[in-house]
Image 1 (tube, rainbow, N blue to C red):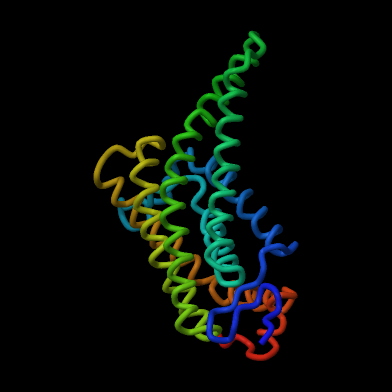
Image 2: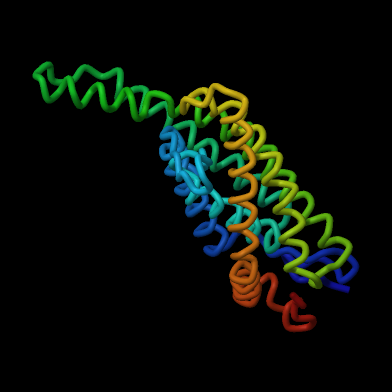
Length: 246
């Protein structure tokens, strides 16, 4: 029996072909989020005190980075593991180019007046550590997003189009833990966290916060995934025959 291009047989999990404008848009958004969150992560942030003297220790990219995982979930569910892996590698190639560009900008000779020197010092302070944050992101996001995508796709092999919300939540927990632990281990000294208590606080808050945010947005992510599946020509036949059950 002939199978339309981009559609797997009924016995296998179904994924859309990545040669579409939808994939391009999601990939672009992921790259932008990664670059901006890497810049924001160079700033250490203290929220609190909340309970007594307890404060939350995090970085300036904390509110944005979970969006990269949400976009990764969409790519993994709709387009499959290979497409997700390509998105991960593309995102970090862009992040590496950004870090190299910042290094060149800092190295270029600037104006030698007082304002020019102040601006140079500010650039070195704000953008100088970005390459270390990028290294932390490369290691953490590569491991975490790969695990996240792998778990999501493996569960799809078992459940097909069913239990989407459960698959999103399970893959998020696995991916975020690996990502947060690796990222924090590399990035903590860069943003000024040098003691064990601060590091544990940084890891725990990062994991709990990112996971909770993704869990809260799971219903929205599921709606977006279903909408994209309906609009992907290579997914339309499968969706029409057996609409996903979330």
